[in-house]
Amino acid sequence: MTWAETDSLLFAGSQPSTTYAALLSSVRPLVAALRARGTGRGDRVAVVLPRSTDLVRCLLAVLETGAAWVPIEPEQPAERIAWFIEDAQPTLIEITPPTAAR
Image (cartoon, rainbow, N blue to C red):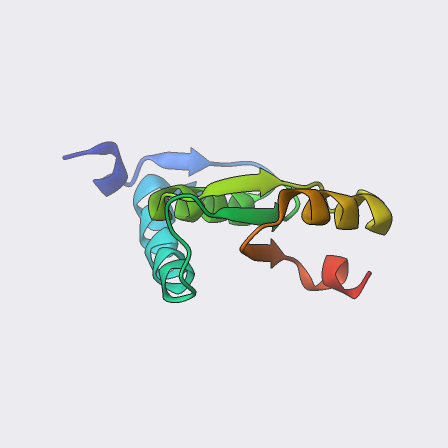
């Protein structure tokens, strides 16, 4: 049995508790969605998410596709986020609705 098949606790505290197995099973659909959008080796995915289990899921999914992630803090001013995106030229942007509205 590997760590990914266990019910060992991965996150606990202010976030909802998550096990390794639950995390891995929740990453697979995101990997499939990224691949369906053509994301793969050599691509860059801008990730504009707050620190959370969703961020971890997203980063693992991006890595699984072979792409690289461009981490962007959603609390940054809109102009700075735009600069990062323009500079990195990502093929895809993962963003939260409140950040997208800015």
